[in-house]
Length: 144
Image 1 (tube, rainbow, N blue to C red):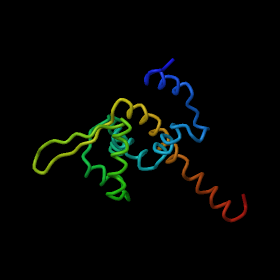
Image 2: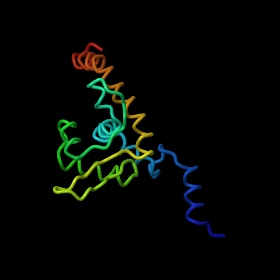
Image 3: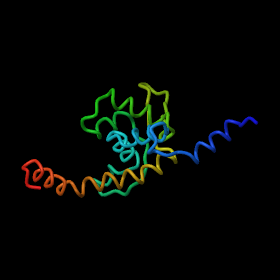
Image 4: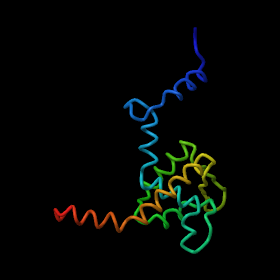
């Protein structure tokens, strides 16, 4: 008896276990745990607008806007990360034939669902940074 691709995917889906080395969900966890992925999803999810008091409204952003917002990201890293997120279906890339060409990025529904988690992760890191720094200082001083 042969199984179709759809049947094989359905069977594999029930067998995903990130604790197993061969599970493809490990690759996805590696991707989405990257700081640039988290920050890109937060930016496209509208989190950057909270600094100006605006609400979290997802928005399309140009490459140059993302590059300015994400202090410290190299052009190569930003490009690679955006391509990987597009490949995974988390964002869409739209090219508008203007002079010069306009390229915008926007979260897909799948990307938006992940953004809700990354927003919480980013907020947690910002909220608890003082505690983490204190703990690091104690540990490094040998007085944990």
